[in-house]
Image 1 (cartoon, rainbow, N blue to C red):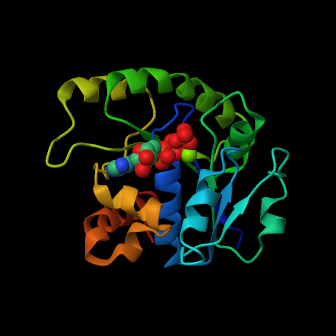
Image 2 (cartoon, rainbow, N blue to C red; image 1 turned 30 degrees about the vertical axis):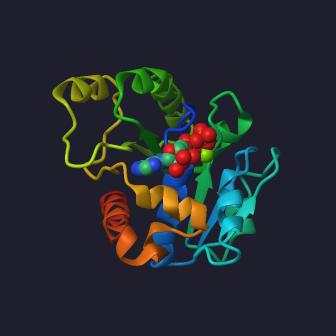
Length: 211
Ligand SMILES: Nc1ncnc2c1ncn2[C@@H]1O[C@H](COP(=O)(O)OP(=O)(O)OP(=O)(O)O)[C@@H](O)[C@H]1O
Ligand SMILES: [Mg+2]
């Protein structure tokens, strides 16, 4: 069986792509062999893993700008899940290729209208990609929701404009996500400190890939 390819995308910077990609990969590693491909020239995923001096649960590989999207399955036959951490850009060939090749696109968004407007362009791009990659499923993932608060009705209206489904599972703003990056591990490896965060990531995995 070929690997599931999950691309984490948003042309808006700082939406939480790397945070989601790294923790998602850690959660998927408990289900099967997983690799993170860092296709962002900023190299944040590689940097994160290097902070852990080998303790990060999942291998992270840097990809050159000319990575071979078509050849992913052949290059990584041993992996069940391939997670692509994409750059904050749509124009870059890297993101386009990631969308062309992925099974699932996860789009983290901050629960602020300004951030959402900046992401709107993505829905057109996804529609376009579906012509050549019709099996791809795309979801918005709310990130950095304030603790103990719900998504406002106004935000729900803005989200409805996207035409891309929003996952019920959301990510709250938690110190654990920052600590994990600083310590070069995933929230799963933070013990009690990361428990709530790990539960959120599990809920995302179960919603997009029910087993
Ligand atoms: N749920 C969260 N709770 C707390 N901090 C968070 C959360 N999600 C992300 N952050 C922090 O927000 C910042 C931006 O996150 P991240 O680097 O994952 O975004 P990105 O979309 O990958 O950015 P870029 O577009 O530059 O690649 C980081 O400092 C990260 O630690
Ligand atoms: Mg990033």
